[in-house]
Length: 102
Image (cartoon, rainbow, N blue to C red; front, side):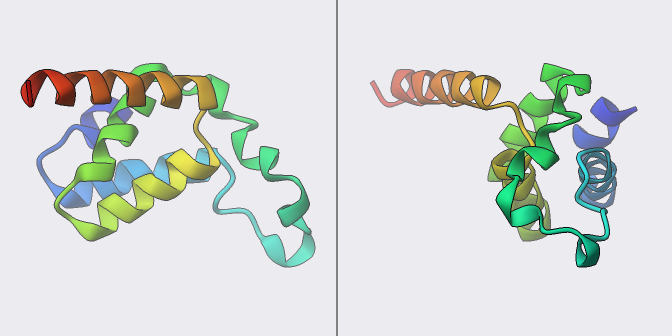
């Protein structure tokens, strides 16, 4: 379901998928009672349950034309995504871009 939402051509579907993912990662948590700024690992606690193809789609959505989708995916990547996977996705993106411009 998440793959379908995030890979949809419709912004509403992508936004829904990002919203669900954010909730899974703890971004819907009530922070008025907790000092979370000291422990940002809180947002990564469920990231291992999310498949890498989903994180790949979120990574790619950082270049979406819709500013809401773009910003939401940036927040998810910065706070919630597994670092090693993001480093790998970025390396692949740079390699693809280098091939295009050569």
